[in-house]
Image 1 (cartoon, rainbow, N blue to C red):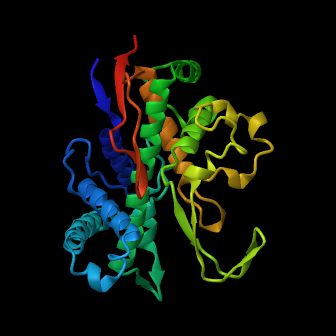
Image 2 (cartoon, rainbow, N blue to C red):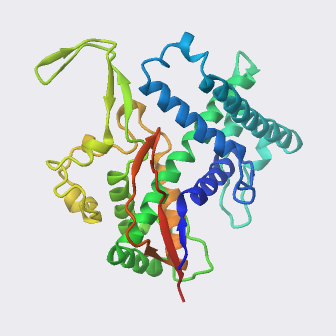
Length: 336
């Protein structure tokens, strides 16, 4: 009967996943839950948002005198220190066991791919390895974007399933029919077959896009709606509003995964659904994110029935990513 805010737990899980999958490094965030890294990410999100919205803090000279400037330096020291420790740990491991030897078949005959960090450590410029700060910046991007946004997507999907028992039951039946052996992890092929779960995830990302607003700079003059927009203009694009446009999505505040069936998606514009942005600067990790979401949600649904927290409605806020100010509580009932 206990209500559990899933967001903090998923945050630590997603951090473990991105470190293992892209950095080949174990950080055990779920075991050591009071993570300075997680707290520093949250603090940086708050600072960035406040700077964007403050006409005073936009100016470096004024901002550098503020308390947030000092907090930013401390947070960055922790974030960069954490990332550097991941890079240095992997460098040491590679020195002991060269990367060529990690690209062999594992115990079940699947070929292990070289991770993102390993590829960076192999890169050279004029015959020299990439400088530590360049590697760190790339790793920072993957670590931050690879866990915080996915956390939002997973958490809101679990919350939505708890609120819609009929939809959850259809997901459970699909997962059970594909993964009949509860003790066997879902394979890549199993996840590809979970079509209805994918519709549910897409509908959750429509209603609760992890990045509710992003920006673009025009690289050339562009005519739009009868006006000429100048080169260099900064534009804000708001998926949260776009995804709730009644012309595109009738009854937009109703959670309906059937919107993303093959038939209902056929004539919809590619640019009417942009939880991962769109165009040449879209999210390069979107396929990974969907696989991760399918993997963890299907595993949870197999083991637990998700029950709603009575009377709870999320108070949505944007701290760079979309969150709920009053949490995302779910009750877990073990399946037998």
